[in-house]
Image (cartoon, rainbow, N blue to C red; front, side, top):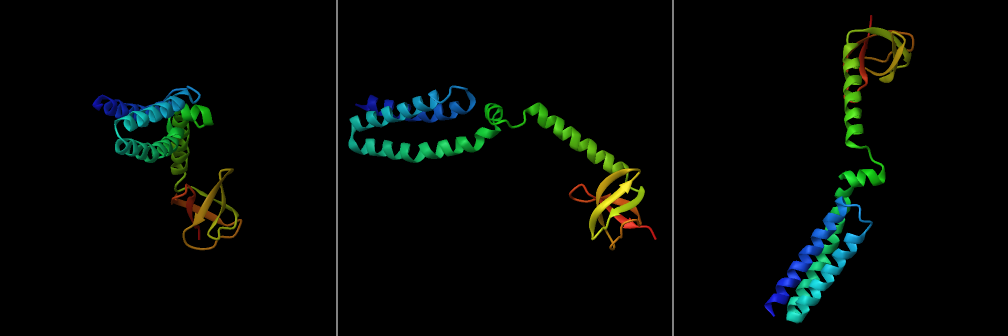
Length: 167
């Protein structure tokens, strides 16, 4: 009789583990079906011991089953299999994007101190031109009309350039 209780607990735990294995292995839902089968078999084994144990097993499956599936679905897009299936960027692509963002930031830092012309009025946001290249900018001090000269003083929080008018 006690062995059925142990088997019930082992089968329920195995079902929960199979749900998480489904995240990382491309089985097309087979492990999910096996997980459900294990959970049901575990509850049946526990009911064979007593109605109290069976009800407790059913309650555990009813609570932990949906919770584990919800948690699994939350972390699934972050797994290599999830990224491959839903089309998210791979680790290599993410690294390339990070390197490109760093390079763009370095280029922006290199033009601190440069002078340019306002293309679109800075109210306080607008567009400036430095050496033929356009950048988003924010004026630190005042409104700047299109055509006025500015100097780059830094980089804002959103990668826009901070500028001041040249008087």
